[in-house]
Length: 168
Image (cartoon, rainbow, N blue to C red):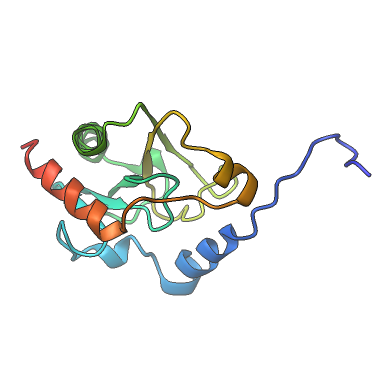
């Protein structure tokens, strides 16, 4: 029997692990926990004065990273002018670094502002930078619900950290 609104539903219960394990309620803010990490440590790829870039622990694609303010702030309108400028500049550098390492065909860049908008870590603003390739959502992802990633996060981090350094 179809739903009254005639919409099909795609359930992704595996995402609840991300919300439960990495969400603010269980361990505090995971982004703030990275406050003292340097590029090349943990998931941190690069640091600016008021922002930093980290790999996504649950990437949609290889090289999927996030750019965020160092300060714990939830809403885009709460950023200072300096934080806003650096967030944009660091996002540009993220695109350059990823392009140098893996030559993607395109990018998805965006902010999920608030839980309802899809922000599972909505208490700390972060902008996603997701490299895309033609065919990156292949049969394995669509049919089996499995995403293939060709390298470990640490290897991706090291490549992007080195690439980022060469931008300077």
